[in-house]
Image 1 (cartoon, rainbow, N blue to C red):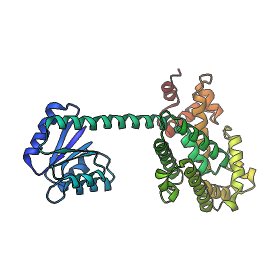
Image 2 (cartoon, helix red, strand yellow):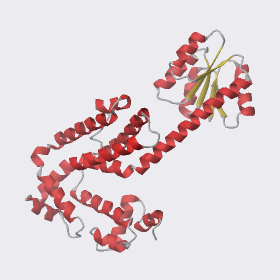
Image 3 (cartoon, rainbow, N blue to C red):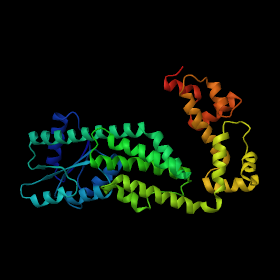
Image 4 (cartoon, helix red, strand yellow):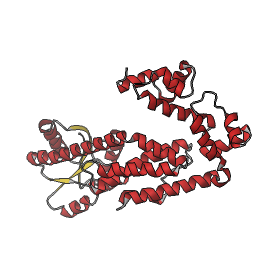
Length: 351
């Protein structure tokens, strides 16, 4: 853990630095500051894991520094150093995310014990964070499918994905109520990022109260459902969905025929009774992407699915997804995912 020491008394700074360097190999003093204002500049630059700050300092004292750290959204640990008569300061410090304190003059054993508790909390948080990252990675496909289903207003698929993610969230090992809320927040944040990309930045959850209230909700899945309904209503308004429902028929036709290499904009437009030019304009307005981009996306998703099946040869996957020439298929796949079909299979352990 990287440590920033903030104190206007040189002997205290020297003493703390000496104890940490001599007794605590898991800690590294990266910077020393004389007051809170100076400390804030270093925090912005260094992002230390732990701040040890004196309570009483000129310009910006320890309590003001703690308030400012939390106001700026930093989550690092804070320890305050105070005299015996500063308990009123300590009570206020605890309200600003300060977890521990040290009394002056600093006692080496107390410093070691206090920083030991800090390190244990830090390690537990890192393990918890790693667990969440693994969970989100394991469910990334469902999260992406949910975002796409919302964007394409495929309600049946939306609620199917919400149900699967909800079950996975609640059954996640050692998931408390607060952890359930946090997982919901994180996968909805990922959905939000996907929707921003799909909509070219036109659609975002941040402006909706359901998203802001999700972090404090006692029923997060209900908030998620309300938020998704709100988003889909917004998408319908954005696209004037009622006057362009014919695009839904086009989506069904594409879904059935995207594996045909000959599938063209003109064929799809004919199938739904529109001119190619007007259909192209309507499709982009409805879906946020061109018809060609949508077809390519479907083909690439199917290609990834088939490449995961060892019974398919790579050239067979190309043919099954609308590419008569393997070289063209490989080029499009590489452009889409930044790795070739063969590299993808190698990563999956399929030769």
